[in-house]
Amino acid sequence: MLKAKDFQRRRRRLMSQIGKGSIAIVPSAKEVVRSRDTHYLFRQDSDFAYLTGFPEPNAVLVLIPGREQGEQVLFCQDRDPTAETWHGRRYGPARAATEFGFDDAFPIDDIDEILPHLMEGRERIHYAMGQNHEFDNHVMAWINTLRAQVKKGVHAPGEIIDLRHALHDMRLFKEAAEIKLMKQAAHAAAEGHKRAMRTTKPGMTEDQVENELLHEFGKHGARYAAYNSIVAGGENACILHYVENNMALKDGELLLIDAGAEYQWYASDITRTFPINGKFTPLQRKVYDWVLKAQLAAIEQIKPGNTWNKIHDTAVKVLTQGLVDLGVLKGKVSELVEAEAYKPYYMHKTGHWLGLDVHDVGDYQIDNQPRVLEPGMVMTVEPGLYFAPGTKGLPKKFWGIGIRIEDDVLVTKTGHEVLTHGVPKNADEIETLMAKAG
Image (cartoon, rainbow, N blue to C red; front, side, top):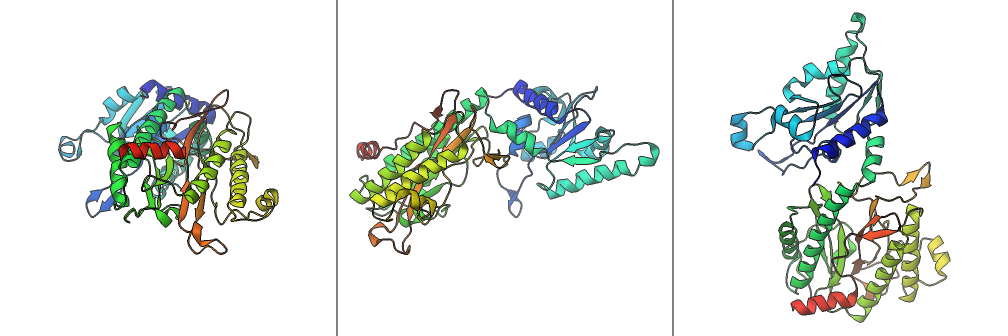
């Protein structure tokens, strides 16, 4: 569990990077209408959550390095007994300042009056311009309020700098407390995937399996999925972001599940593929084993000093060798890789950063060079092979086989740690688990 001091430390670190003479402004997420007068369940903006831990909408964080009256300021909703009776409790400025470690806090309704004064005399505004167009207009209005008073000696900021570069590089490196939360998210997701393996039977529908996943996530403290779950039977697995989840599961086909749990805003991301009837066919097993070989080889490349692209390149080489072994491709592996002959069957990258967002922030290249891995980074490793029906030149026996295997991996000082080790991925282990549930 992250505490107020953890968020204070992050805010101080960010202020040290932007320097005196700057002001940083970070708005919360907005509530989003689902239909008519009902809203989607609120989920905090990840940047705002990372710096504040504050769970409410209609809030703004302001950081003013060197300000004597207080550097860390929050604007939030005021207490309102009537509104709270209908829509739930609010912290209010006084309690928010105390519990989340701000130097000061003000009602959000007073922001137009107070914030221009906080901006006055600052040279630079650090703000994610273009991310929230409505809030962009507020920022420009505050700047123009100051510019209108230049003749009175008021100094307005002359530069807007994108805050995301510095902030997102901070988020890329996970602290010990964050890793604990991510391990819990991984555990909840792993238990969900095991439940899906135990309960799946021919004749069930994809959404029934999805509900089994979500039930198990919740049992382990993860009320929400980290993203829309992919529960794809048969040829649906060849659609990378399939989310309809409404088809019946057929005997003899495979089920691909790409689903992760969110625990205290942190995401996990697991994919497993298994036989709906509990037993791989010889061809399914042969394809599966090549995908697993590619994943294990790619994971072995995760260690400090290796580059990001080495993970993908390793997976591609093994998958291409597998495609030759399966008879899908013909030729020398090195030449096939160079020609990208694998792409009709493996068209995505082998992973992405993971954290507060399932596709988390952080650059993959530095100065046009692949990023070097460092301790504290967390990424997914998710190679796959997809044999969509009707693919030109593909033997019909492969049609409808789609396999992906994905785990979440932490870069450690000496190598790596697989956070999602709790769910089996060896074909024999999967069949054994499903047989026991049988």
